[in-house]
Amino acid sequence: MRSIALLLVAALAPWAWPVEPSSVARAFDAPASAYGPGHRGIDLEAPAGSAVVAPDDGTVRFAGPVAGRPVVSIEHAGGLVSSFEPVEPAVSRGDAVRRGQRIGTLLPGHVAGQTRLHLGARLRGDYVDPLLLLGVERPVLLPMRDGKRSQARGCAVRYASVRRSSETCV
Image (cartoon, rainbow, N blue to C red; front, side, top):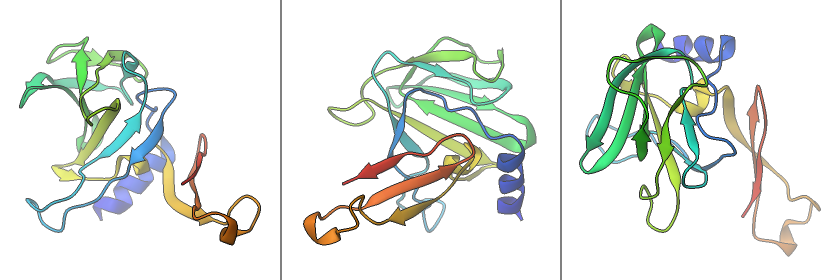
């Protein structure tokens, strides 16, 4: 039932992308159990120093260090909470934020040697795939551009989106 509500929210008013330009460097990987291994969010590639913006209206729930990393969390309507790291906060706990408002600056450090924004989302305490909230459907595997997979070992992945699509060959 929660996934139906999540899909309805995403279809009616998808979140704004928190960094631009960005591409998905690591996808959501739901854990099998509450404390099991997984990736409870998505990683977005963006340059260090990029402005990080609120994906939707809400109230800052937390802004500060967690295990030595700077984190910002925002509580949105409907029991949704977004979280961002590593982000040097430009907001404080209790601040009201508007969709697209700058909430901080992306810092390096989430992945060694790369700058990525980790975006997490929870619906009433359960982790959910932020791509759904961004208006992105599931990834679709496409044939290679020239149609000849034998000449290359890669594949093309496209994320169908309300706003945009991206294509990556590996």
